[in-house]
Image (cartoon, rainbow, N blue to C red; front, side, top):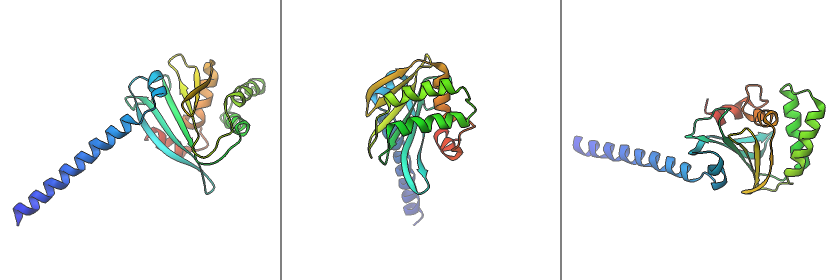
Length: 181
């Protein structure tokens, strides 16, 4: 009887370890190619669903080298949209969030809104927008895996990604899940 329990226990432990290894491998393999080109050794840091009221808006995934995010290192934030949204409204909401974090230069915000509006399309359920903070602190934007454009402005890059990753974010639970803190 003891031997049987011991064998069952070992089997459960072995299965658990196998599933853990398999899940880590699946996460490592799920990094999009366009992310690994800019983010060396990219791995998932964290993932969370952004919900507004009771609507799922997008599933957010943060990638960083070896799964360790640093604000000054390359990283990527992938937003997998769960509903239709107007691209211009996405750009405007981004500016509104930057403003909430203390950016007050209206001319600069207007310029950034126009740049984002030219890059961000209207999205449908299943569309993906990925922002990549490059090693030179530019922002590259990919729409469904295709490069849509680059904004080469370190202030923009910091302010844009602060929407999700800054301690001043309006969505602290999302930040916590993305950063695994």
